[in-house]
Picture 1: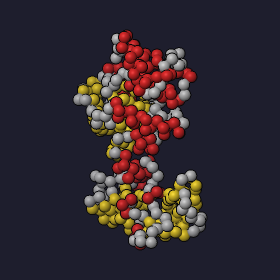
Picture 2: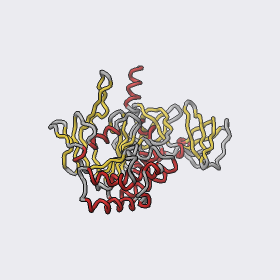
Picture 3: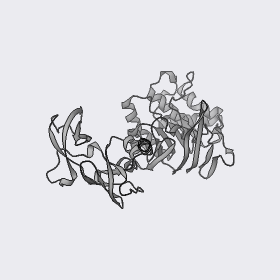
Picture 4: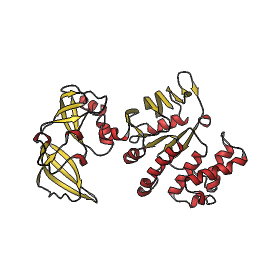
Length: 377
């Protein structure tokens, strides 16, 4: 459906040229909700704008359904208005002097993809009903809540019947409860419409809940692409492990690696851990032993093998409603543990922590960490 090859984009910052995208390759299948996830400045919005035709790449190509939209080598560049796309912006970009109906209808009356006048009302009514805001049709958009304005922006995009919908952090201006409510609704709607969607966000929970596939980005590169479960449980390196959810990362080195399983030596002992698909670890190389706070078991079950356990001391505890978070120190390592709220441990008490091997992951240091360490050596 969407093919991106070698995409590179730059911008000027004073006298310097900054690379926002550095040779990005992506394939997005029809009907997918594809999420671009990463911190501010990683290049995700630049990539979305390149797809939309709002930025001109300096290298690489973009195709949709085999039709080229951009090719820096040949000089091809299809302008935004001629691309089979629609975009929902973070700010919603409403026309404040117009009603809900007129906001949705305007691109159908005045844009390149305008409809015959007799068809506009039917199309607008259809999408407003689909999004459950047909009762707001005559209202001024300035009287709507944030969630209602978000739906109007989405309706305006969907009314164009694009082959691809681009969404640039459309939920970030909403309160937390409304964000959570709309995540599932938007995902269901995109699947109902069989609409290929590229969604940009820095919110990990939003990406995991909404995405069929996720591309985690950093410094203009796509670091890892996969389904939400593999991204969360099998991060490819330190950057993904730290950015997607909370993860304990214990420094160590590789004793042995074979077919997706590694033995990792830490300051405390040697542990067995999994590795992500496609990752190879050289014997003796630096790595991290990663495990999610919710996957640690404390106190350890009596039947847990000793080689999967650590002696630790509770340093603090934090009540989080249905969960209790504990800080632990085990030798030179600090750990975060999430337990059911009924598990009560006293600060200062000694405990035994179980690290289940099938929940542990061996990850490479991120390139930045490796570079920093090399510079300091």
